[in-house]
Length: 145
Ligand code: DQA
Image 1 (cartoon, protein in one colour):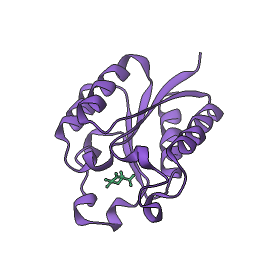
Image 2 (cartoon, protein in one colour):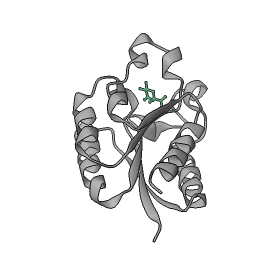
Image 3 (cartoon, helix red, strand yellow):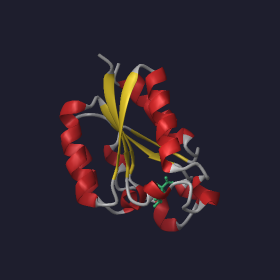
């Protein structure tokens, strides 16, 4: 049976394709996810996608994921920069979580250059558009084999 991974998107990422396309690209959310699931498959992984605009829902899903998934690729959106609750949830689960960002968070507003989740993630990838997620999936594939 294929190893399962979770691709998790935080707030506002459901609006991919519409939201600030100059920064986040013009590919819509469904098309991005279809590409990611296919990429995961090409590496022998089965990917599930989860998105929420709510901090608690993301935390609940992280807790659940610890039994079902080999690892998580997480774009926590703006929660990246201030959610100690999400950081604690990542710390609490034993599976690897890879932090990803579409934009280069270090080249934007000052507040985006700090991630409170980075220290508890396996690694962080930022600035490569949707490819950031694929690099994260690749890292998980390698890390969990
Ligand atoms: C983001 C960067 C965050 O600063 C922002 O709040 C997002 C998206 C990215 O993918 O580049 O919502 O995580």
